[in-house]
Length: 611
Image (cartoon, rainbow, N blue to C red):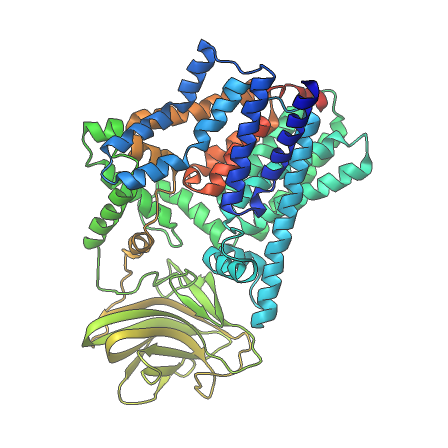
């Protein structure tokens, strides 16, 4: 019997290591690894007679799964029952994993846990190498060298398309909010191992300290705002706990603390002008200010829609929610209702934020918020050519559709930089005009277009009026001194702000389309981007309270055990739940299940004695 159990335990280890490879596994394979691991834990618990079904364990399980029970019941009053069943089924790991931890009481010795984390560390290193390899292949294939790795990672859909081309359909997911959660865990693990080996092995200490900086650097480089906060908080907890531990050399903690603070400070300073940094800061600022802030995050409009939706609910919906199957439908309807009441004069969205993916970039990239706009209170963007050895066009674009033949006027504010010529196009290749931003002149290519240019200080407001029917292309671009549409790019740049498309031939004062974010989230049918709000809408107050109690319980266990890794995990999920529906995505569920299994098993009190 002993030999049989030993074989099963070894097989159990295999699935632990397999699950540690989840960043490199397709969704179906990582799911198989998770459920196989859970099966063998239950089997081993039964054979070794460690399975415990007591009144206390049953009550604990009911306490931790209450919010899931509520959302499961909500299937009954969801109108979209098919979607409801799918969403509840997706949450099954959150029912199985706690049940295993409570009833089976698995034990992972510290040595084994560290080996599993080292496998996870190795997996993420391979993951980054593959991402960077895809980036280099993209540059080699396209010949475009003016896009950085961090810029490509921030364009998740574009990067996903590139990865699919090279490595198959959805083998890897470059969503930085999700892979950054794992990086935070690995940064703290590497820091822990570095301190542990400070007086034992200088080489191991240096290796792990380098890995700590590597993962911290990646978190700052890709800049998922919640995970940057989680990293800072987790490092702070680590330093506080280790300073109090007399078994550690105080000098090692001091040196590491000082280096950490300097490194993170430099990293944040380096990213101070990054769009995601500004979006995060503006998101926080917008909580306390009612006016719209440029570079606002679409989440703001999601949360406003949820607030508007929740103000209309009755007592039943407040207590029990709409039902998990109807949350997205309710949100989509609210997005549409709010759009109806917004200004429609300016047909363009993101008319001041040209870096947004609403605008397609053709051999050009945008630098947001570079200098004062014509109105002074807001910042203008830069259009910059990508250097090219072949003749190309350099512009940003979008499309408009008109059922009937109508006149439209397209305008933008522009100011010369190293480039002096702006091109505006509305329709086919001939429906365009080029504007000389040094002399205040224009050149039109046929009588289909009526151009105008007006000086406003050191800015010009340039416009074209033309007739369109059906689908028409809207272009803002750079031209050369010969007014050519295609030429050799040389990294020249000009400044733009305040684009407007309006029906009719009159050029009217510019207004921002304040429905841009609403249309953006409506067209993409974005979810709540907040797991707390998601459970509030799905199962009402009862569900939300149950969910908060689970998170509070995990924090309580972590603080009681004085366990840095458990606290790091709690910080990561608590912060990320504020900005993402982590539990609505496979990657989020696998991450949480994996971390629960390796950090919240028995025998975790030995973590401190190991240190």
